[in-house]
Amino acid sequence: MTLKEQLKSDLKDAMRAKELVKRDSIRTINTMIKQIEVDERIELDDASIIKLVQKGIKQREEAITQYTLAKRTDLIDIEQEQIDIFRLYMPQQASNEELENGMKEIILKLNATSLKDMGKVMGAASKKFAGTADGKRINEMVKKLLS
Image (cartoon, rainbow, N blue to C red; front, side, top):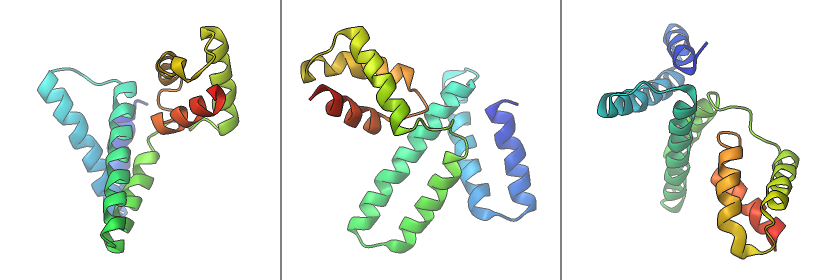
């Protein structure tokens, strides 16, 4: 079952169960997908949809940061619930151990020795861990291993 089919099925289930947050979150994802497909006249595959979901999670995390500064706990809770729903459609995240081992392989392969090589390592790591680790985690691990 493709991710689009999964979203469609889960949307129906959420509507039947009257799960408003889940319904609205899935509708948001579907809207993001349709927007790209209509604008660019392409059919998105699962990898592209995962990138969109990651983007949605990042937007909501940034919103939480802003709401925290404004002391709007009511809005923080709403955003966090949406993030939890969005994460249901992400692949299993790499553990810190898996991430560290993969990063060590990349660093050895590229002969990276210092933070000057960070760009090369980040590029390779972003491709290898696409969908299973976000850029922030990858960045922190690269800094840890190269310093």
